[in-house]
Length: 442
Figure 1: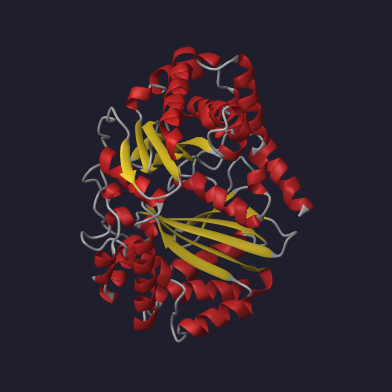
Figure 2 (figure 1 turned 180 degrees about the vertical axis):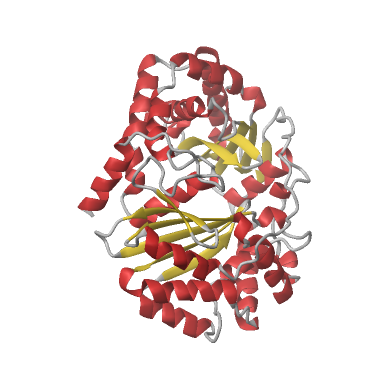
């Protein structure tokens, strides 16, 4: 692992000016030497970090498109599809497929999120070929047998019934219903929609989502570029070349209501969530907003909301904020929980801090501390093959380019006080934040 960490440090320290990978890229390797852009003979492109100190290979696969494009009345179909991807393929039924994975010391699973469909695999170098064959089978010859389909639908239906009394689920649904009524983002599965899902529905969604033109791949571990190229075509060769999915429109958020949305639930504490306008991931001011968010509530025990509402006043065990950057919806979000009779006070304090930060901006010390932490903690995201693969996949999904790892800290360090104050003045407006309370607030 020492060599992996050394390679990660070198990866972070290198300068780069390489372009994002794409069909017009002229080189197989970017200027950032640790990340290779590998293209198979069949045209499948992958980011590769080749590291042979640990004999493990991690593969992340993703396709643009997710549950937001599920057919009307079939909400939950994507979840069932993800469940079924390791429930048997070819001649191997559910039990045989699972036993074979155990024999190979491999893990493989898939999920369908709102905007992305993804699969991940890790395996030992010694069993790499056989493990990739298992993944190939899952794509080329999924069994979709009745028993696991019924089991998946049953488990999902039970989970959905339990979610009806889960404060986080209730808050999320209420927030989206207020901000994006009628948009696919505000839809959710119910036991009734799950009951309508058929084997044919699952096969059709898989064919629509898992196509070569939507595929991106990241590979990290004990494998070379020459070894990887033919394997990409072997694993993904059976996927349809293209697919036409319905477009998902950007959300035009409804105005924030003047009063919090209250969802009664007989629990001893009130969950509070809040959401205001945010920025696209590609917005030039994103990094200023990222630093500002750390100061407001994203810095754990170093943020204003934690310092005041938790540490000084003792009103909550936890409070935090974040930047949500879904492809079609960009929000500044936050959450906390407190005693029912203190919920109004917590909301008042959150609004006061948002307003003050918008009017005055941060202090020089807050800005310096935020930048120091955000740049210093970044390497911790890369301390294993699997974490490197997952993080590189998120960079690819955000279309950040192969050189992002080397540039990211420079982008944060380049943020000035004027940048942060400008963003604060534009976005830190409490009247634009929607608040939801779940519990018995008084």
